[in-house]
Length: 574
Image (cartoon, rainbow, N blue to C red; front, side):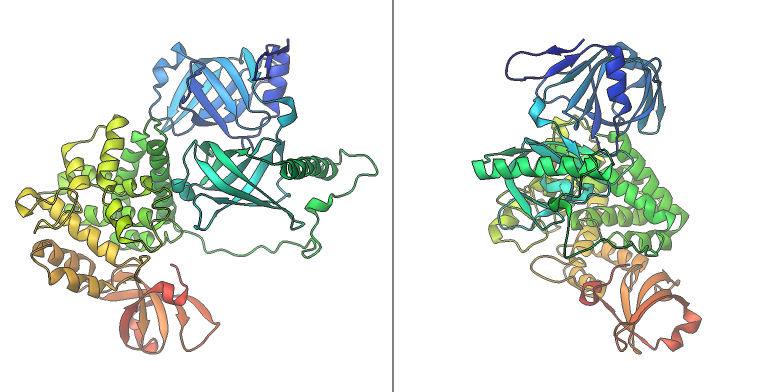
C-alpha cells in the first residue's frame, strides 16, 4: 500500500500491484520521457536508456518495453538484472524491481517482455505535480545557454512549480549538458504573457522514433513575484486542460493565458512538402546516430558503438548504390549544424576516394567510422568562452578550438571506445600539414600516411566551401586553386585525384546559367560537367520558383553555364 517517505524527499512509495498497473496504463511516451536503467541504480549518474512502452496486459501487469539506443546492453544477461523504468513526467515516476522474462534484439533496439514492477516511487513533492500540456496547447520556449548568444527554440511539454519539460531538435543539443546552468528560460504563452527564470538541466533524453529530445529543467532562484506568476501559470494550464477535455464544470471557460486576441483560431492549411528521397532519409538517420553518439560522449554515458558501425556501413552502401545520388543527398542536409554536415561530407568523400584506390579500399569502413566522429571534439568545447561554432571567432577562440582533437581522443578513452590505429591516425592527423604548420602535433610529411594526407585535402576543401563566421563560403574552383598552389602544405596527388572525382561543379552545388536560371547539379558526365540539373529559380523573374529536372539536351533553354554560386546569397537550400 502507499507509504510516505520521511526526510527531504517527501515522496511516495506504492507497492499495490493494481495501483501500479493503473499508473502504467496512463503513461504516454509521446509526453513522458521514458528511460530504463539496470539494477535499481541509485548512484549519482546511472545511465538511462531511452525506451517506450509497447504493450501492457491490464490483467497481469506484464509489460513489453522497447529499449532504443541499447547497443551496449547484452540481451542474454538481462535476466540477471532488475530494471527501473523512469518517467520524467507525472511526478518523476520510478517503476522498480522489474524482472526481464524475455529479451530479443532488433538492430540497436531491444524488445523486452517483463514481469510487473514490484514498486512505484515518486520523489517529487505533491505540490510539484507536473501538468502535461495537450497537443493543441502550444507554448514556445527559448533557452539561453550563454549570455549574448541566440537562444535555442523549443516547445513546452509540461510544467510544475519546480520546473518544466521541453522538446527541441536533437541537433540543437550540442550546447547542452546535464547539470548545466542556463541564465534564462523564457516561456511565451498564446496570450503573449511571458515567464522567465534561470534553470538547470536535469536530463537530456532522446525521444524514441523521433529526431527530438526531451530536456528536463529545474527552475532556480525564483523571487516572490515570479513564484506567484508561476503558480498562476500552472493553475491556468490545469484549468485550460480541464476545459478542453470537457472535465470542467458547466461554467468553465478558456483561460486568458491560452487565449490570443491577435491570432483567432483558424483552420490549418496543409502544405504540400517535397518528399525526401530514401537516401536522404537514411542520411538523416545517420546524422541522428551521430547526435546520440555526441550526447553520450558529453554526458559520460556508454557509447552507442553499434550505431556508429551501422552508420559507416549504411553510408558506404548508399555510395555504392549510386554515387551521384549520394552526393546530392548530402547537399540536402542544410538543417543540420555545420559541424555535422562537414563530418558527413568528409566521411562520404573519403569513402569515395578510398574505394577508387585498390590499395586502400579494404580500410574504407574504419576510415569512415573515424571521419564521422572526427569533428565532435569541437562541439564538446562549446562553453562560455566558446559559445558558438558558427559565429565569428576571436584569435583566442580559434586557438582554443585547436584543442578539439585532444578533447575528443580523451573522451573516447574515458568511454572505453575501441579506437583502432587507422581511426586514431585520421582523427589525430586530419588537421596536420606536410610542412609541419598543422596541429595538434605539428608533424611533417614523413609522419603522415597516404590516408591522412588524403583526409586532410578532403577536410580543407569541404571546410573552405562552407560559410564561416568571418567569411562566406568559397566556390569549389577557388578552394581547388588554394590547395593546388600550396604543394608544400597539401599533397598534390590527392588534390588532383579529388578534382578528377568531383569536377569543378560538384554534385549538389548551385549553378547559374546565362539566362538567369539557378539550378542544383544532380548528375555529372564522364568529364565532370553537369548533365542533369534541377531548376529552382530565375534571377530575372522575382517571386517565381521552379522545380524542374532538366537534362543536358535541354540546356539551351537555360543558356550557357556561367558559374557556381552560393545558395545563401539567394536563400536557397536543396
